[in-house]
Length: 324
Image (tube, rainbow, N blue to C red; front, side, top):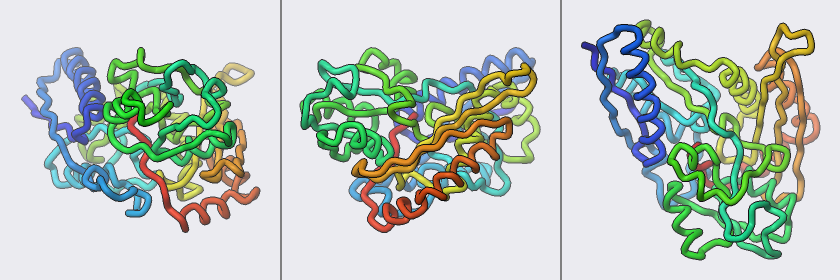
């Protein structure tokens, strides 16, 4: 019997996500006649340890995956379950994403008393969010609102809103769905209103590149439509050299082509100023995920997107996206 050690962050959401993946893998092992057992290993990352400083001021990429990837490379663990929002566009040598399972709802959502849509929030309402991406799009639509940072895991953020610290908060719907808390959502923000973060709602399962046995197992969890959409979004992010410190969003959807042969991707990407004073979006369609993502990024760069990002990075004020 092989014991497969699965590394994960120790937040409630991360453990819940990992538990769901492990249950799927157990079923696959049984169906394939493989004798496996799984052990979950909790790993504290640099991003988890920084509680009193905004992560954008720390800088760097992979703040929530670096230690987990080191554990993979050293053999301490065999698999890692990540939120794709946490995974840098540049991959670690010797490691591969063995599977990207089917995506959860990629949308952002609103939690507020008596309001199901942004337009229903009262004038001057105080909104909590950890994301410059959300803040930029929120203020572009409702400049009258007040936005303040909201730190912590999903449960602590919900408690702060329930305690009256905020009139409303914005979160990723996927995390609430996975935690079984969908009933706490007041309303969903359509991508046309608030473009999600790159990879939002998707998980990535990482392992060592030479572990053929695990790669064969993980291949059965791969959801190709999700993987293609996430590839396009990550190509967009990679071209902009972005991370959680800047207001970038991208959402790709996969549709059948007109002739019914090749699947066609449509990606909408955005760059904005945190105060909502400038918001750039571009939509590109095509059959090559990386080409679609890069083209959308190039169009935004041509319109001054790099200048906006450079100015934001020169004055970092943001937190990390919440889970999902």
